[in-house]
Length: 388
Image 1 (cartoon, rainbow, N blue to C red):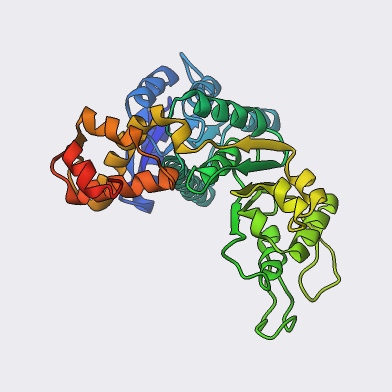
Image 2: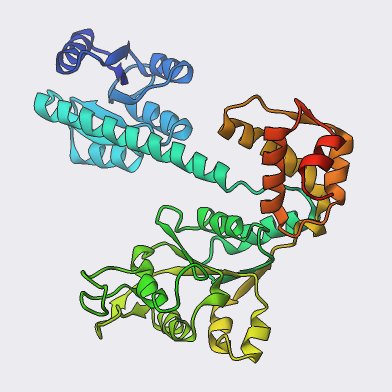
């Protein structure tokens, strides 16, 4: 049910607006305020989906209500209504963040249509905010070791720029998390982040995956298809395990980075793209260059900023925080009561050598949640961690 606030000093107009809106949708929950001061008090104590606000009122006018509300609730749609309608006032309210401006006496059809559009806009904004929170939680970076603080500081510096980033580190260290945080903190965060796992795509298909293809370009190309570069236009393209990319695809990626243009497989037509590329690898690319498996010119294009992600063995002080995080999130996923862990059991986990890094630690905690007791003990760790 949508909750609306009508702010209007004339009682007769308040009654008419309430009647019109109730007749249009009986599910609307409507509150009223006779002046700006009363409105601000209601907005402080209640959550609204839309505000209809008169401009000329005693005590506090509508423009001040608009400014104060937008300062606290920037995404809340506010439709301004005034009997003193003029272009200058309309421009001022829109500049200050009003969703729309309607003159008195309002055209009823336009009023109802504006209300519906504003509520749809608010619903979409709320859903997007919720989705972003979920995404942020999924890619949460856990740990306060000096190594993690250094990575977070680097992300804060590089994210607002369009500089290309090469993230290095062993499998399971969290290179993908770093890439997602760079994107989320960047100016491109409202545009897509498209991921390509270069190691998971056969070498004969990687070019089609990245650049798309025309119908008939190869045997199974039954229809034309856009590639990942086009899908990421305006946003970020994450090339995971870039060291596994074929030399042929490397040449085309190099051209795309140099010229901001691509060609679909089977086409000679250039397509302009605006993409920030973040790459990651678990390989020593300088050694790959020596062995003629990776292009040096592409390496220098990708490695404008280097972010090495340490192994879990290099930051054991973060293991308690990671364990606490996994105990909670995995319990939620499994639909079971979160378990606790003995401090001695934590110490045992800190002493292990984690060849699979954070991914391996997560698997161990999931196993302990399923197989261990209500409080995870040293015995549980030794029995179920498969490390002993």
